[in-house]
Length: 236
Ligand code: ATP
Image 1 (cartoon, helix red, strand yellow):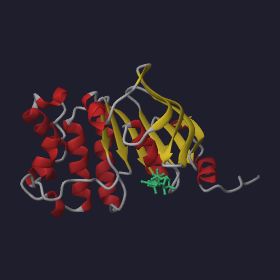
Image 2: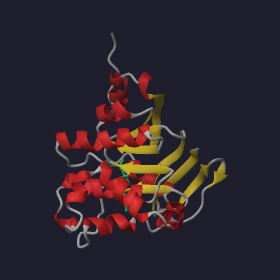
Image 3: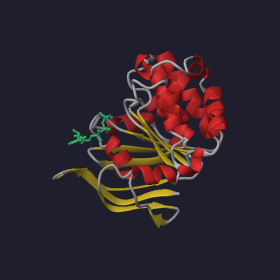
Image 4: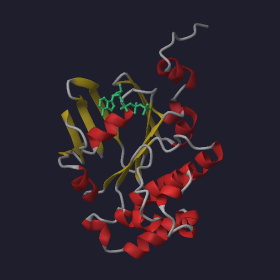
């Protein structure tokens, strides 16, 4: 469905991603794991047109072009690292911003009900300023705002960042539900065990290169960690 071919991207003269070729299958959850600075967020920025790139990004075989807002209109939606909620706006105002693309404006109240169904805690706090929410609640707002756009492909960047384990479990329960509903998901995650527990396909990125691409069920965790931490594989 979504594919990159020899994707290069970075900042100014610094190249971060080096010829990254990846395929994200329709209806599947693809996890991108890798250490700090591997280029995971940069990959999502390139996919969503936030930074320029070289190489190809294809959607359904055709080149994907446009800026972030055009892509949201085509159903490619980013839930950014660090939540990026509008702190002075209420929970519900933040959610409604997600329904701005033309294709999602029509059913605002049905979409809100769906999001409140997934995140009852947001319904209880719908008038509260987003800046006063806990980290877990803010992550729910960021995911809910993404869902308001009715994504065909949801790109989620480090949803577990800075959250207590019990809240991480709650957030991943929702990700599991979205996957079960058939949403195509690209998940960036540093926590390999939680990523593997939910993923269909896994790619390991380190220093801007893809070191491993496998179905999650086939991943050998020791080998993944050897590559992740750049350590010598243990010999028997
Ligand atoms: P983390 O898990 O720590 O978020 P990551 O794999 O998402 O890491 P990126 O955020 O993509 O990594 O960063 C990759 C490299 O690009 C890093 O060396 C980082 O310092 C650099 N970088 C990121 N954003 C910028 C920027 N706006 N300007 C310059 N360099 C940047």
